[in-house]
Length: 194
Image (cartoon, rainbow, N blue to C red; front, side, top):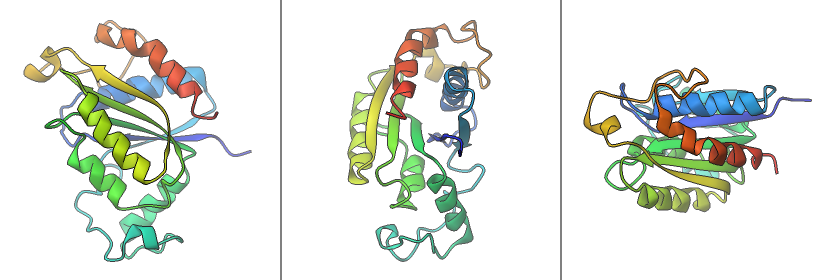
């Protein structure tokens, strides 16, 4: 039997960001709950640089067999197709999700269609508007939103050099605010296979 594979799509393009640390925390929780899960992490530029790759000249809605013009997009198609579920993680930029996350999604269509997803949007103030925008986008793909987290992170995480630790170590010493989200995330993860 094939492993249940979760794609972790991190929308932040910044080198020093909070989303990478939050993704590490999510990865830790996924593996703690389901050690047999395979987790594939993608950012707008790694392991594939999707930001600098031109959008296919034929609408992705019209490509059902992965026959994209660009080799990077064909690889991206295979990666997303191999995922049973997706978790989107993005900061709020100007009251919405990042443009780079939109590019990651815009390259494909059928590969996302109908998949169970968790939406996680974070920011120092309410992330609800960014969450509303992301929900509207994934609904166009008829993805199955099983849960959402609109995470308010402490303001110092964006107003100073402080960032969520890039590797979650299983404790909440570095980023204690994540503890309040642990149960909600675990409940969301349990809905991915339902």
